[in-house]
Length: 165
Image 1 (tube, rainbow, N blue to C red):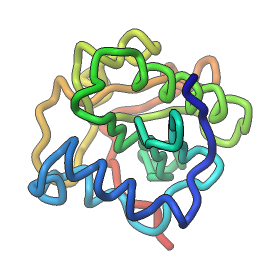
Image 2: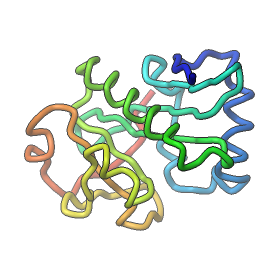
Image 3: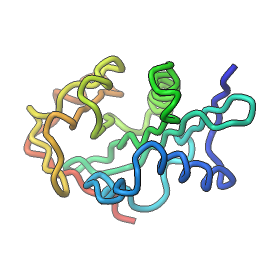
Image 4: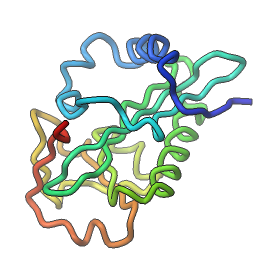
């Protein structure tokens, strides 16, 4: 049975290998990497293992959406040969549950597969006119409310930027 746990520094090399397998060497050229400054949120960065082998990894980062701090989900990486077996869903659901429990952030933003994230409650960000740091296909940008009413309170357009250190 797969076990979820918080990432530790000892996981970093294995996570890097997993991300290389999942996304390839061009992953750092994606505009979303411009938002990942500083360390990820330790309490929300998870690994999923079975019999000691890493199956999946998930990280969250704090970013600015307009004038408020929100979460950026990702990267979510699953061993390529294990995709479609529910490991990504398991780790994302746990990450969102932990984010809600912390109560610090009103929203989560993701640049991800448009057909994958709605099952977790994500909605298209297009109506909120996100101003992203670089090119991204608009349909990839999605938002999830962690606090009821957080989406209704948004006033577009909204600049998305890395949180100042």
